[in-house]
Amino acid sequence: MSHPRPVLAITAGEPAGIGPDLVLRLTELALPARLVIVADKTLLHTRAAQLGLDVTLHDYQPHAPAPGNGLEVLHVPLAVPAVAGHLDAANGRYVLATLDTAINGCVRGEFAAMVTAPVHKGVINDAGVAFSGHTEYLAERTATPRVVMMLAGAGMRVALATTHLPLREVADAITRDSLREVIGILHADLVGKFGLAAPRILVAGLNPHAGEGGHMGREEIDVITPVLDELRADGMQLIGPLPADTLFNPDKLATADAVLAMYHDQGLPVLKHASFGAGINITLGLPIIRTSVDHGTALDLAGSGRADPGSLFEACQLASQLAWQHG
Image (tube, rainbow, N blue to C red):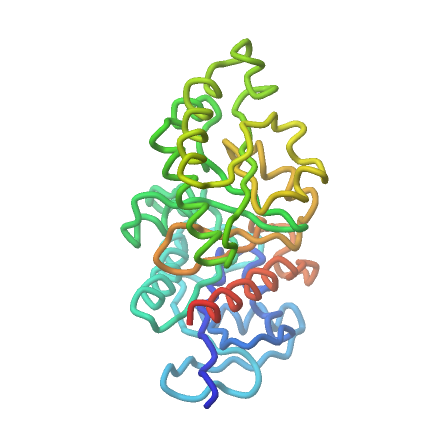
């Protein structure tokens, strides 16, 4: 007896950005999954016409067989018509409504995973909603006390001990408790979601040269090393703290399943340099599966036909793989 294909919810992101362009290209992707685009259907029709794409759009019918061609759309209405490349705060709450629709569907089991196209944080805040990013929003909406942001690409997995924080706040945010929780989530999902029985994790120091024995900061001595020692005693394979400027060399990476960077711009520039356009963002620690593109809204490319769907394709492929593993 054949098993039903997992259903993935794909949110189209900021309507003025490249998200609608990218999701329309999903007709090119063959996956053992049913893809449902969560977006305004008229927006997709309009953008397809602008791009010269002949894409059939079907209304998503959860209890009916999937259509044999085109794309299924779970319609969420825009507040005002969207123009490619031109942000409008009136549609900020529309973007959140698409996320809520996908999250709710995942929580109740209708969707096996969700994949997110890029949103524009600024325009959502301009709409009167405090919003620092997908990662934090998903944690709040699923009542998850702590989540971990991880990007994957070019054979690397890079997780973050802190995410969207001003640099001057990073050191204070890295405490023994927070670091212990982050490493615990990273290790648990590498085992449970990625099927790695005994993952090896490289851990970056916070300061240049990992603190140079305390001469360039004491976070490694007072916070990071004690936590690593404690978790190593529990059986985790943790290497570090290592200087971030030499951590990302091929020999070290070849021995590791993931890297834990202490802050956003410590780890992600390296990964994005190696894999931009094909990287994936994964939120660890959630009760649902969520993957995303690794890039922004690219307003200057919206409606031009020049947006590269590679990252979205990779995010859908990983979501499908993880959904099958947990189906």
